Length: 297
Image (cartoon, rainbow, N blue to C red):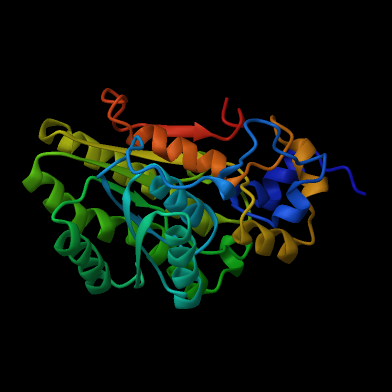
């Protein structure tokens, strides 16, 4: 099995991705040994730490979004989430209801502002408020350098990862401003801090997310609204699986090159999102939370 240097890891752009299959992730070289999850057997707690909170999540039909939706629901939140793939979204909703949680799936596409507006408005019509928004939706990146990039590839990346966050905040913020409170967490990435050679479109989208987050946090702090972003490294989701397969890479090849030599799991990222959503974190605003295991240190 080839031994990749950190420079090779960076130039492939692989560490800017986010996901792979859990079957591979359980192997020793990439296993998460920090607070292993037993959430599959955990019922919802009506009086949990997010009891009665209304949580909106974009892109929660799989991966980080789905895990975070389930985690909030287990802690008593009323979760409304979207995504383009109805079959997956309906299954996530079914899974949440099976353990006693409350969730509603709404099929919609964050690339379409009218659909985002309807998604947010439907959430507020159903519950009367919006306490927490996790703008998570993102797409697979085809690694390629700028001069070789297809324009549709570039535009789809920006439309989903960056424009989708912009549209979401554009419709979430008026609700939060009116109710004089709210928390927004945006999905950024280690790629929002680095210039990986083969993923310029992904880099641009995630740098943009961090910029939008800081601007919105600055503008809305006086309105009792906190806005932060979160930057993972490589997380065990279907998106990372597709990226690694496309590049002919394996977890075993890549994990030893990271500062924390393993692939993160989605439960870790969900816990970080929920940390930023706690009422206890009142002084954290306009920050991009590093959840790379030290890669940005």
